[in-house]
Image (cartoon, rainbow, N blue to C red):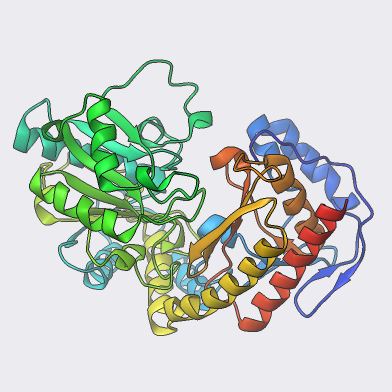
Length: 459
């Protein structure tokens, strides 16, 4: 939670016993306090925004501590566990590779890396025919920016170097990714203007007036900022905005694709959260009906270990000569084995289809809650199993992070794990169960969420 620290004082909470949720201790659990205090002592203050729930094990959609409490996880470990926590086939792949034993080899090839990049390229639509493996989502953003700028210079000279992105976007926490990002609270440390990064309003933002959601408004915003099409090297957009689960309007997206083609601009979709079944399709950008020039992936790519990827057009991906675009942990064999197992599970077990079906149930449940509390829920939006509820101050569109914090805290006390990301001041609830969630688990989670909203509003 942005700016909020969870207290380490155990509170007596009502016991919970449902088919999937069990709360039978005070929270945080008194016996967990010494470990939590060690974390507070040795980690930076920024980590104190995490709820003080000490996980011991997790399987599928369920998370347990060592004191008999069990939660339904609607965070997916922040959009990582698409195939569920601790999937036995992923565990087996990790163990097998670790016992080989080959744990690391950096700039030398390995077989899991080869198998993974081939699988990814064959899974992706044309023209995404080259794959570069990295470690984190932010690292893929940095790579995509570098490639787009390099391509821009190659086709338009050194003045074609501007990266256009959208307000409220989250692309990572490294310098380049935060320059591209559109969340002011994350950019205060960037004390000077970087004219080669330009942000414009996101046309899928429900708060924007209709006239500001058009492609013509996008062009006007660029012009008002002194940015001409011939200066733009790339446009980077989250497939859905991580802080809101909002998608681009379809007409806008198609016009953007045509504009990028016309002006030799690299169109980048950040799929770090949206990829691999999360939105009810294998790739989130399938909802737009076209393919970007570059796409960045992470999180749900492995459902477990840190690995990420950039997929793109061969002419862009091949801009750098041998040895000049690498990374220390590129295609780590254990991470690659985990990712390959995960992707096969998602495809073979039809988890994207399950996300689409469960997403309809999620939409119905969330819209029912939002209608009941419409004075303080500005919108509930998403696709598949990526959803947000916007908490607002009564009768306004102003974000209410305190309300979001209280709802998250009450949900945790009821055995439901979710979070509120930093965008929109930490005032949106992020609701993203693993893609293996069942109809019964989803219904149980919606019951807990409904109760939490009712109790917070009554208090």
